[in-house]
Amino acid sequence: MTGQGERLHGERAIRSIVIVGGGTAGWMAAAMLARRLEKQPVRITVVESSTIGTVGVGEATVPGIRDFFREIGVTEREVMAAAKGTAKLGIEFVDWKRPGHRFFHPFGLYGMRSRGVAFHHYWQKLRAAGEAVELSDYCLASAMAARNVFMLPTDKPVHDLLFFDWAVHFDAGLFAKFLAARSVAQGVAHIDATITDVRINPQSGLIDGVDTACGKAIDGDLFIDCSGFRSLLLGKALGSGYVDWSNLLPCDRAVAMPCTRTAPLTPYTRSTAVAQGWKWRIPLQHRVGNGFVYASRHLSDDEAVASLCAGLEGEPLAEPNLIRFRTGHREQFWRGNCVALGLAAGFMEPLESTSITLIQTGIEKLLALFPDRDFDPALAGEYNRSTTLEYARIRDFLLLHYWANDRRGEPMWDQCRDTALPEMLAHKIRLFEAKGHLVRYEWESFHDPSWLSMYAGFDIAARTHDPAADYFSVPDLQAALARMRESIGKAVALAEPHDSFLAGYGVG
Ligand SMILES: Cc1cc2nc3c(=O)[nH]c(=O)nc-3n(C[C@H](O)[C@H](O)[C@H](O)COP(=O)(O)OP(=O)(O)OC[C@H]3O[C@@H](n4cnc5c(N)ncnc54)[C@H](O)[C@@H]3O)c2cc1C
Image 1 (tube, rainbow, N blue to C red):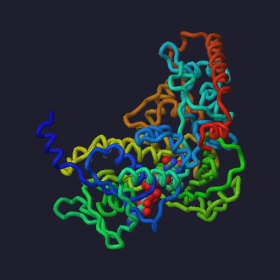
Image 2 (cartoon, rainbow, N blue to C red):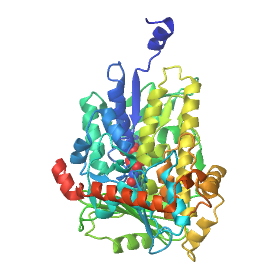
Image 3 (cartoon, rainbow, N blue to C red):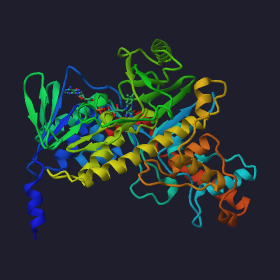
Image 4 (cartoon, rainbow, N blue to C red):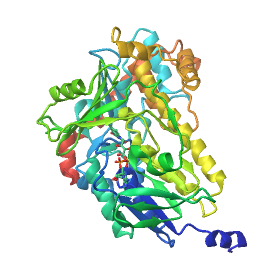
C-alpha cells in the first residue's frame, strides 16, 4: 500500500546528484549510487578536472572493501585483474616498538575460545607461568603472511582457528578507471571541467549548482564533495570548519614513489618506523608502492625524498609525489544538500589503510539516511554524529601505535610517548591492563583482534587474566595450544606462494 507520506516523499525525491571529483572517492560514490538507485529516476553526474588530477596514492585497503565490490556487483577477481591487485592479510610493523623488533597486525582471529573465555586469557595465563608463547603462532593469517603464502578462506570454517579475512592492494589509478567505466556504462554522466564557482541559494543556503571554466553550469539537488584536500564545496563554499588533530598525531607530510618489483610478492603491507615517521611498502603485481609519512618539524622535504629514494628496492618508476596534509576532519561532513567523502571530508595518515574504508562507510551511511529535497536536518545530524565517532575511533587506534613506542632518544617518538591520550582511549588501555578486558565502542572500525595485536605487539601487558581461565591447568593449556599450532600448521600447508596463487586465480 502506498500511503500519502510515501507519495509526498516521491514528489520531493532527489532528481539529480552531482559528484564533484573523479578520484577514488568520486568514482566509488558514483558506482555505488548508480547501482543502488538504478531503478529510480535520478541523474548522476561526475565532474572532474583532468588539469587538476587526483592525489595519486591510496593502494592498501581493509577487508571491508570486498563488501563494496559485492555491493557494486563485481568480484575480487575482476578488480584485481583490472587494477593489478594483490592479496593483503594484514600489516607488518617493523621497528615500531623499537629498532629490530617486528610484529604483525593480521586480518584474523587468535586461537580458540573455550568455556566462554577468549583465547588471549589463556595466552596470558601461560605467559604469566613463564611460557614463551607468541600470540601470532595462533593466527592463521599471521602464519600465512610469515611464509609468504595465500589461499582464499573457506566459507564456513569449522572452527575459529581456520578463520581469517583478507583485503587487497591495488593501483589506485586503475581502480578509479575500472569504477569509472562501470559507472558510465550504468548511465552516470562524466564531465571533464574545472569548477570555478559554487552557487549557493541565498534563501535556503543550499547549493544550487557549480560553474565551470568552460562556461558550463551544472545544477543538482544533492552534491557530493569528492574534490580532495581542496574540499571545494563543503569546506570552501559552505564553510564547514576543520577539527585539527595535529597535536595528537605528529606526521603532516608524505612523499610517495613507486618502484620496480625485485622480490617475491608479499601478501601484506609493510610499515617501517624511522626516526621522523614511517615508510610504507605496498606490493602490486606490476610495481611496489613506496611512501614516507613524516613530521615536517623533524625532517625537511628534501631529506624525506632522499631517504625514500635511498631505500627503494627497485628502479624508481615516477618522480616523487609530495603531499602535505593536516590530520583531522570537517566539523560537519554533511551540511544542507552537500555531503563530503574522501579527502574532502578529512584525513588520517594511511597507517592502517583507513581512508578508502571511510569513503565506503560514508556512502553506506548516506544511502541509509538518503534525503529528499527537504533535507531534514535530522538526517545530516545522525550522519555527522556517527561519522565523527568513526573518525575518532580510528584516530585513537592510530594514536596507540605512536604512544606505545619504545624508541627512546628520538625526539619525535619521545614526544609521542608523552601525548596526553583522549579519555576513551586511555579507558580502553586501562581496562586491558587491568585484566585483559577488550572494549568495543560504537562505530569502531577495528575489532578485538586488531587491538590485541597492538597490545601484544607493543608489549602492553594485562596484570592478570580472567579467573575463568584457571579452569584449565598449565599442562592442559600447553597441550591444547600445541594442538592449535598443529591445526594451523596443517592449514598453512594448503596455501600457495602468493604469486602462484594470483596466477592460478587468473589475475596475475
Ligand atoms: C600519502 C597518502 C597515502 C594514502 N594511502 C592510502 C592507503 O593506502 N589506503 C587508503 O585507504 N587510503 C590511502 N590514502 C587516502 C586515499 O588516497 C584517498 O582517500 C583516496 O584517494 C580518495 O581521494 P579523493 O578521491 O578524496 O581525492 P583526490 O584523489 O584528490 O581527487 C580529487 C578530485 O577532485 C577533482 N577536483 C578538485 N578540484 C576540482 C575543481 N576545481 N574542478 C573539478 N574537479 C576538481 C580532481 O580533479 C580529482 O578528480 C592515502 C592518502 C595519502 C595522502
